[in-house]
Each structure stands twice: as C-alpha cells, then as structure tokens.
Image 1 (cartoon, rainbow over the protein chains, first blue to last red):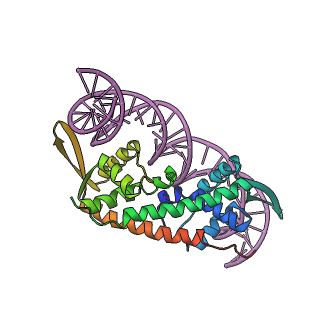
Image 2: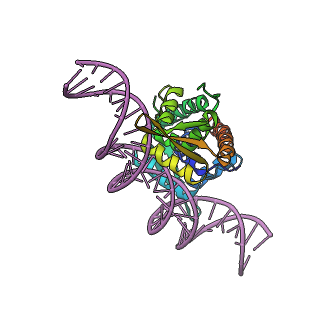
Image 3: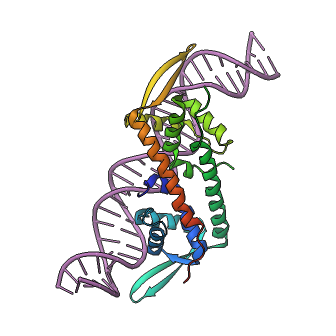
Length: 113
Length: 113
DNA sequence: AAATAATACATAAGAGTTTGATGTATTGAA
DNA sequence: TTCAATACATCAAACTCTTATGTATTATTT
C-alpha cells in the first residue's frame, strides 16, 4: 500500500525535521531515499513537494545549508539550526498526541441515539 | 494543545467517513461538535473546511443526504452509501498503517554514518 | 424587551501547497 | 553507447483550506 498524498502532506515537515534531528545533515535526494527505505516503499516523497518544503524550512530559520562537491556533482546538505532542533521535538510530540486524538475518533463505538 | 490544521487536512475525510460509519446519519454542525467533544477540543473542524468536504464526498457518491425540519430550521443529514461504507473501512485501515509507517520514521535512532 | 450566544446551513476570495511535468547534468551499469 | 540512477531545481495548473461573510432561527442572559 502506498499512502495517499493527503496523509503525507500534513506530516512532511515533521518527517524532514525528525530525520535531520537524527542524522545531523542530509541532502534532498537522500531524504527521499531514506524515507522510502524506512517505510518499506509506503511513503514516497516527490521532489516537487520536498524541495519547496526544504526551502520553506530554511526561510523560517529552521535549517542551515552547506554545499559539497562530489566529483563535479553538487550536493546541498541541510542541517537543523538550534531553532530547528526544538521545532523538531515539538512536531514529533504534536504528531504523537494527534494520533492519540485520532484514536478517540477511530476506535469509538456507535453512540447511543 | 490544538493541532495544526496541516495535520487535520490529511485526515478530514477519514474522520467524517468513520463518524458516519458509527452513527448512521449526522448533520454538519453535529460533526464539528462531536469531533470537538471526542477529542477534548483538540481537533476543531471549521465549517469552511467541512462543508466543501461533505459536498465533495457526496459528489463522489460516498454520501447520501436527506433534509429535515426542526421547527423552521433546516437540517441536512448525511449518511454513507454502500460505496461510502467500504471507503470508510479502507480509510481507517490506511490511517492505521500510516501511523505504523510513521513510527518507523519517528522512533528511529541515528543511523550509522 | 433587547441583546447576545448558540445552532445550522453555506459560499467565496485569497492564500497556501502539491501534482506532474519538465529541465540540466553527472556517474555507473549493461 | 545507451539507459538507469543520482541530484539539484522550477513552474503552471490543480486543489484545498482559511478567514470572512451571509442568512436565519432559537435559547439564554441582562
């Protein structure tokens, strides 16, 4: 099962921030591949969605970048700023609580009329 | 904590379908209040988001409607069509699996470099 | 009695985001 | 040498939500 993009939308930033919190620095393509791997192909980030998101996080001061050359190919690494680190924790907590709230909704039995 | 609308976006249809699967028929305002109640105010659906969604689900043939008068006030009830019933199950399953996939991402320890 | 809050529907402009396509270029494998 | 994979990125069109607005009835408060 590949998840509908609707679900991914709401969690894309959370995913990116958490991966960077765990891995110090990553580049865009690496993020797509890591997510694919860790979720056994069920979450596939498209580049059209990822790059604008990375740029938005950078504009918000949550990410810093550094460019590296691998042979002649350029590679842009993203890292969390201090602000980004606390945001990452915040987002992961929020998602955890959100799942709890969703369980209240999805596990309920029919209410009495 | 009130959840960022980003998170809710991806699950709005799932929430609506599941509530209707449990409650036979509900009207828009009732849905907003039930969600608010069941999640202890943490998920608050706005009408501007809910009504277009209900109309979209109806247009997809997942919901049927019937109008009732409570005094002079009109009330529009939504129910699941057969197609809507199977879609509801599908969506709830998808969300459950999505949460599992997200746990693979959010619980991971730093990977070895 | 009057004002306010709650109930209940709904739309619409503007804002924001994603999809899907496209583009460039290097490196490795067949 | 050709194709697939790596690696960046943008853009128009499509989609969806936010915020505000609108209408109207009923219940509650002052």
